[in-house]
Image (cartoon, rainbow, N blue to C red; front, side, top):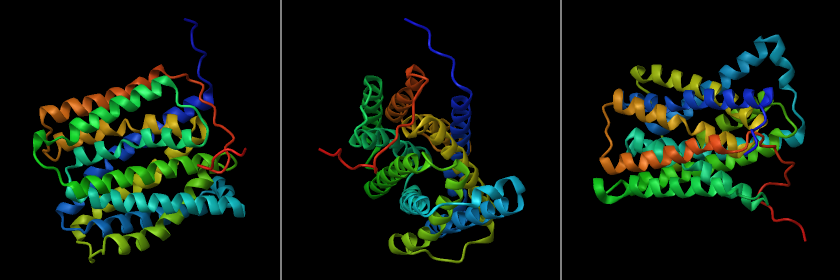
Length: 311
């Protein structure tokens, strides 16, 4: 077998950015659980952390001279960022409502099915799914069956549904972001997509969650930390999508599973049954197989996402 080409510097930047995003996101469910334990309402938590993250990002861009250039955006690009922010807002509300009903480790493992959904959505856009990606999809699906089986008792089905919906909308936002990022810097995309997300999240929260303020003061620390995680993780994720494309970035950022499960078991005292550990291992194996993929994953010039090819 011929040796693989050395990775280009921009690809390494994308890999490091995606892994940084994963490390940040892995702690978000734990911080949310701490806020819930302090008496915070899940919908109020997601609304507050999103708004704080957007305000902090605007402050960074306005204060830092080198980042002011990323404030410029063209009208069509702004519409794309609005679409990304809207889908991400829906996914976030569903995620934190589902997390409220499930253990952090189990909830995040269900949510982490989104790379499979990203691959399927990209396939609908005319891109082929490689054989190795199909194998990873099978392993992850089998892992989900073990994870949600009745071996550990009847799961909270509504919580499971909420996490699956969150995974769908997160995958859609990754697919949409790949199209928008083809012609836009990742820094600009992050600012306006996160701003749109902050604008749409309260609407989605009131529709689906009916938040109950006020937020206890003891929950503010975890919420402020969640805002920082959201801001930096989105910068890392969009930089990864810009360099690597949506599928490869999604597969790399799912390494956040390891962070979430480790923190949930070691810090919150949660536990998985033996069958659930088998399911988690299968899902992790499906992720680790990404190292066998080609290191050169070009970002395609997409049509409008999910539209069938013209005859």
